[in-house]
Length: 161
Image: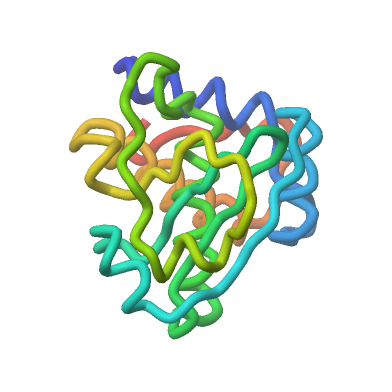
């Protein structure tokens, strides 16, 4: 088993998928597991592009909670995938280290979060290729497993295993 497989397996065991699938219920479980509320907010895609978010999503970690910001043009499964990608970063421990400098948030995005203590706002450019791939696989696999019928004793395994 690769390191990525082990990490994704650990993340999915820590917060099992609800049955039947419900994204809001899953967000609630992730928030409870992490001890931090999570809110989701749509914004115009141009605002995210200013931040370099090619994937149309952004994780904003504040002092006591998290916000997932995503492109308002994303709908249905595409929106769910973007949100799950950011959840993947959270559950896989991809947050910014305490000693890393925080890149300034573009003015248009910062205006959405007035007078808040933002610890970090992480988009694709801050995570690096390996972490982006890991979060993408997490989102892909979560969406696949969320739609499969449940069988007793079946675990969350990567394709081909």
